[in-house]
Picture (cartoon, rainbow, N blue to C red):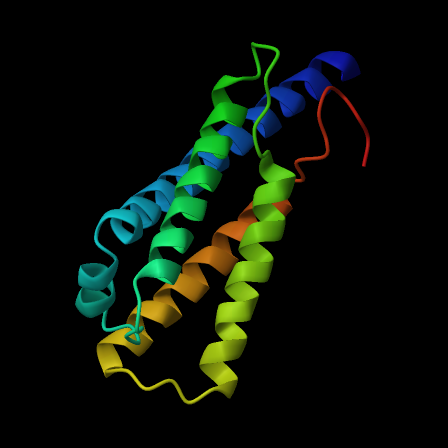
Length: 147
């Protein structure tokens, strides 16, 4: 009986992890694609600080798309001999990325309109929130492993 209950818990954990990977992947791919294809337009639309070149927003966009694709590979590659980023990697990216953005918002005086501050605060909160939910999903607990 205990093995059946543990199996149901493990299935639930895997389903939560898959759901979080999909949500995280969608967020990364959408923002990354926008930054990759329209770096100046996205910065202006969101009210973010201007740069002298579109190099950095484009590179950031490409990295975000790559992370998103890696997350989808992890979700759909479990039945194949391929793996992607995985939830543990997503947690590290979200906690460090969101944390760095939060530090910039709290410490630096960024020259941008209120709209830009609102957008960055929303991004920081969203990224840190999904990182915390991913952390609470305890992705290292698979196949009946105990914590």
